[in-house]
Image 1: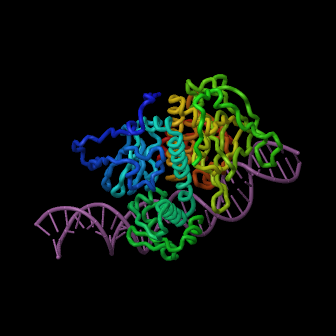
Image 2: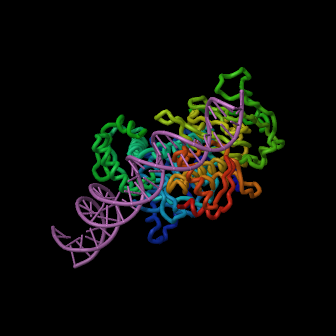
Image 3: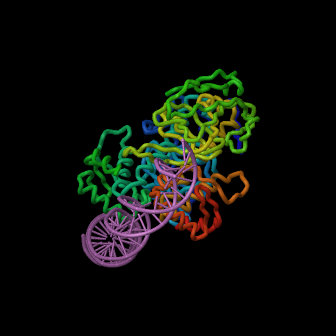
Length: 261
Length: 261
DNA sequence: CGATGGCTTGAACCCCGTCAACCTTTGTGG
DNA sequence: CCACAAAGGTTGACGGGGTTCAAGCCATCG
């Protein structure tokens, strides 16, 4: 049980002073290609709109942001971790190596969503998180969060609300796409990606799947071949159009119907 | 955005004063058979050992505990809710009605686990939670939690740790039992139930499944018939023994092997 | 005792995983 | 710019595992 004690005189500006700055020594080959830390503040942050934590009391706070290159591994299993992340742009894949030694895809992360809430309890990173594209991560230090929550009720509520939403998403997203036929799973997956990418955006029917086919198929629990077939099937039925990794939702209502079986 | 402000002079004893006390008017037929509220304090609580929140600074705090009868519905979908619960004894089933109108089993809750973390974000209860047996629930008011976290760093860390563990469990528990053959799913399910029921307990090989077969099969995504067959198969292989709802784990290692396929 | 609901067993069909071949895209080096 | 290789993705045929449907068995309770 680790208790973190702060002097009550610490200011909001101080508590978020940049830590880490990730040593610039050249790392091993497969490790992240040296994320570039950025010094900014919440009110100059260009990505305020997607951040679940832009509390009024937090505006003006320096933040620790970093850009990761595609395919870079931010954290892998059993890494020490004590930070929570907010994805500002790009997308992330979460995976674990199952007992068989294979990579199981646990889920994906899109802008505005949090990763690493488990670090409140566990000090070893239980997953591998890999960037699917060039991504911008905002780092939140646990001890700073603890202190901010105590001195700002506004921020406290906002952080807990963000956590509550994340829990809900983690519970319900997989539900729809783990039962039913492969076509239902595929339709549910597309709808999930579509809605999570189009919050606070203009309605655009198409989007790019940032993850390869076998990641998708692993996530929804089918084989890549079946996924390919069900995508063709959905296309023939006029629900979607597919061009490589670009998906257009042509008939959202039909897609919903197919998703429930 | 609701901000709750407390006078900083409030004491720990005051903040947890009993609210609600659930109106004693006779409710509708299907609603809970009038849970009986119990006035107690954390340090007289007989179930301290399973509670993830027995912070030293919280000992002595009055708690709002209630006993629910088997099959009673504590909350159903779209109920207003602003509380978080800790299950002290018994077991709970979490379900939602899917778009087809059927009940999908989302998961089960065992002593020491929390329910309702989503209430930080959502004010409507998204699930139906049903008691599988006579159960004891400890109720935590959101606004009390907010205040307790601010004045007690110890409690703050403990609550967040509990949440982190819950998130981890919600993510990893389903993973093992949603891929692979029906036998692997069944084995994984039994192992999950076994380990979650035997934390902090003597090693006992057997336990009672508090939920019916079709709840299990719905949860792991197979048909009741397939579940029945796979249980027979596991029994024939000597991994478990089955007598009605009593399961004995005879060969845990074999069960692990079968669970990974 | 019979009725009811939960659970198990059996047989037939069919969806989906497996395996293999083929096509497309991407990246690398000459 | 082209050749080639490697990875990613699609299509086809086949067989097995699991669902479906039906009947039967076994608990619990009036």
